[in-house]
Each structure stands twice: as structure tokens, then as C-alpha cells.
Length: 205
Length: 387
Image 1: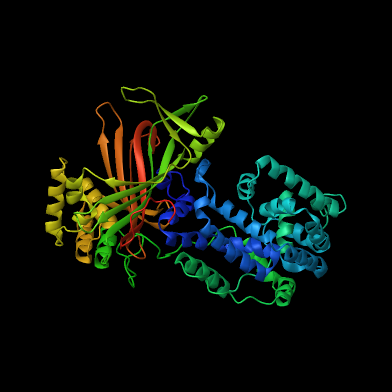
Image 2 (image 1 turned 90 degrees about the horizontal axis):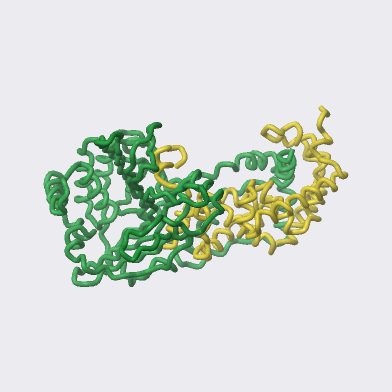
């Protein structure tokens, strides 16, 4: 809708909420949300649990979402954030697999250097250089975080939700999101030797 | 710098992309549940295999996975899901492109009109609508506009002697645009909206609220004449030859005391095509008549309010006002250019502002509707909530 100024003028663009609400009258419409969000939800779940567990959790997320679609709240600004709500469901399902998640971080801590993966994007060089040296420490630090802090960190870093969306996903106030995120980032930096990991490599080739 | 840290986390955690089967199987599980069937049992790898997979595959496929990770910003397009929608679903081999002229698209739709035949006691049409009157809400020095969203279901009995029902649930009012939402937040995010004094002898104010209303099912009474003339089943009974159809539609509009302008014909035929159980011949005739209306243009890609993508076929009328300025009334139908199915439509009436865009501060209104279901059913009418 955003591509068309006329259509944007015709109403607030929240097609997700509209599709979800429409699915209460016509359940088939719910598949629209799967087509829109399965790939990114699976990316999030697989990041935390690995590919196969991630497949299961992403699939389960949409089944749970469908069954509980009556509980989706629309009485908030913008008519509710379906995407954030899906991430909340996935996060809850991931909690049931906590042992798998821990195993994944331990495996990544052992996997060692992955420095030459070639990361596209602006932060290529920096991320690549830091990655090899810091990944085992990063994986251990993720494993050591309290689950609540890790949720906020990974919803921000992996799912790339903003404060308001993380708040909606987890059902906690935005202020709490902020303090959990601060705590998680501090813990990561301590794991890197008490320094800002991004600062370590600045100035290096 | 935070972004670098986030990037490092994404790099570390990048997992191999899903197999093609994974997405298909997951979608199938969901559609099975939607259809009320038990989900097919997923073949679950053993605990050990799964562990090996998550660790080793993550390293082996890391190069590929990173490309995936970088590309997750844009979720996959909606595509044609084939779910719900107005009657007349068709999947033609080839036709005019989405950017073709409106008459061409409409004639292509006419050629592909399909049947809405079926059995069932009721013709049920379920719609999601969003609408706003351009009435400002003033709170704490802020001014913003709100729109209401609602689910409506109309159950029209096949037997005209039976009762017709309307189910409705308001989903509440909310800020109309992003700018309205910003003003609403500055005003302290109020959850009820005062539209000002009510125009009634009892006085009081018109108050509307944010949260959803109660789902209601009411019998449609007192407009039997209206339904028998303008109801979906009555519309489905119109002549199937284009010239005769146009004459009959003109007569219907005049009967309502309205001039049968192209705009009025556009509205009535749009209604027929999205909501009536019309047979293919009549649907084809209705599309053909629409293609003859002057001023219907292809206004480009537009999604309906549930996000289904189509092109807008739009009719715009401008009225010079005696006191200055121009009032523009736009009406549109959204056509899926792949299936030639109408998804819904909408209207907006407003004064034109200095920038050429609608100026909501001068009053007016808008509404858009997505038709999500139109079919015969034996189901007993119930309120929208809880299907």
C-alpha cells in the first residue's frame, strides 16, 4: 500500500491486522500471514535452535497463532502488530527447547573461526575481522545470559524488532525492554574482555 | 556500533536455509489445521541427528546461510493464495498485464467470469471494512483523525420467506494515519475519542472507543422491499445481456431517486460483482458494462485492507464548489490481475488541498472493504467472533 500515495491516504496501512481479523470470519485468509512471515520467523528460530529444530518451531508458531487468533489484541495503536505477536509466540516455543538452544551455543563456541564467511553489507570488514576472534566468546556469552535478556537481545539483533515491537512481542513495558537490552549488551562486552568489541578492531586492517 | 554487534550476532547464529520441503510441509500443516483436519505427522529426525544437524550443518552451510540472513529484510510476497475472496475465482492462462487499461482488464475479467453456483441455505458474504469520517478529535492541543474497522457478515436466505441476518463486530477506532498516530501519542494515547456534541435532543457527546465492540447478530428487518430489490440475491437476478443489464441497473438507480450516472452504475455493479451470487453470464455482462463507463482508469497497484495485492480500477469525479475549491469523489474496485477476481473496493470523498491531495480538515469521508468470503452455506448464522 505504501507504494501508492492514494491508497495510503485511504486508511492506515495495517494489512496484517486486517488479514488476521478477516481470518476470524474466513480462516483461509490466515495463510496470507504464513506466506508473509514464515521465512523470517524460521530464520529467527533456526538462529536460536539450529535448522531442524528451527523448522519445527517456525511451523508450530503458525499453528499456535492460528488457534489463538481470537486473542490477538487490536485495541492498541495501529491496530496491533501481528509480526511482533508471531515473534512472541515463537519465543515462547523456543523456551521449551532451552536445552537445544544451549547445545547450539556450545557447538558454536567450539566451531571456532568462521572469519572468512564474507558478510555482505556496510559492516563487512569489521564484522569479518571481529567474528573470527570473538565468536567463541560471543557464543559462550549468549549461553550464559538469562533467558529474558537473551530474548530481548536476539529479538533486536536477529529479528531486528524495535523496542515497541519487542515490548509487544514479549508483553513487557518498553522500559523493561530497554533495561534488559542494556544488561545483555553489557554482559556481552564483559565477555569480550570488558571492552566494546567494535572498538577493539577499529584501526586494524 | 550497536549495529556491528548485532551483525556479529547474526553472523554467529546464521543457520542453513530451510529446505524447499520444509516450507511446503509447514504451510501444509497449517492449511490442514485451517481446514479442520489433524496435521500430517511430521517426520521428526532423531534427537541425535538433530543435534548433529544443528552444529555441523551450521558451519558447513554458513556461506549460504549468511546470504539468507542478509536477505530477510523483505518477507516473501503475498502472491495468489487462492483463499477466500469474492465470487468468480478464475485462473486464466494469459491475459492483459496488470498495467493494461481499465477497459481491457474488465473485458478480460468478463471472459473469465466463473460460477458461484452452490448449495446452501444462506448466501454468506463476510467483509472487513475500514472507514473514517473526517471529524477531528481534539485532545490536549492535538488534533487527529480516527478510523473504525469492522467485520460484517450478511446472511441472505435462498428462500425469500426466511429471515436475513447481519453479523457485525466493530474492531474499534484507531488513529487513521501514521501522522494521526503520532499526534494521538503526543496527546497521551487516549483510548476513547470525543467527536463533539451529539446532534440529538438528549445532548451529550459522541464518544467512540479503541477496543473491539461486542460481536452481534441481528435480524435484518423492515427492509424486505430493499433486499428484494437491491439485496445480493435480487442483484443476481438481473438480465445477462450487457445492454439490458445497463437499462435495468439505470432503472434500479432511478427507483432509489438517484441520477443513473456512471459513478452510480460503477458502485452498483461493483456491489453486484463482489457480493451477489451472480452466474457467469451476468458477471461477464457486469464486467462488460463496467468497461464501457467513461472515466474508469487503471490507477495502479493497490492492496486491499487485508494486504491482498491487486490493481485499482478507479472512477474519479470532481465537483467545483460555488464557494471555491474542488470536491473530489473517488471510487475504486481492486482487481486481482492474476485471477481477475475482485477483492473489494473503496471510496473517498474530500476537498482537494493546495498540494493536490485530499484535505481531510475540510471534512469528507472514506471507506474501504475487503470481501473475504462470498459463498453459499448451510451453516447457521452466528455473530462474527469465534468461527
